[in-house]
Image (tube, rainbow, N blue to C red; front, side):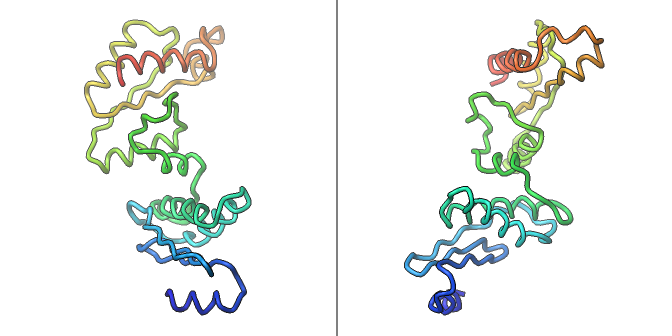
Length: 200
């Protein structure tokens, strides 16, 4: 591969070559730079259909956003790892890529608020580490001692806790049109503080 890449580079038709190598990841080779080999980001493989398209699209997006070729290729490697972990031809969402870039403890985001696809990525990573994951949800409008007890019990039952928060529209369907009492981010922030204190 290295010899073939060097032969192409010597023809001056491009400055870099990015070579996808299946389970061995991606290699980036340039005229005057040492080769960079990126290990595969895939945790499990269901279907490799579309993985090459994902790499090309992600590299193009990365370069258009101002990333260097190795940075864009690293991002593409992550995106490809996500799509081959799904059945059929699939896509990688922004949330999935962001979750894959973040440390898998999920504790580095000071707000600890994740979109559903990001939360699912965290859960998969936690389970691969053998961690037990608990889930609970509610309206938490208004937050009361029973909620705090629920959060505390749920957290003590597992290594990690996911708390689902009903949206304002959902709360109105459940409790009537004159709810919610706390709207939008206020509810989220209140539950977040409670979860942080009892379910760190």
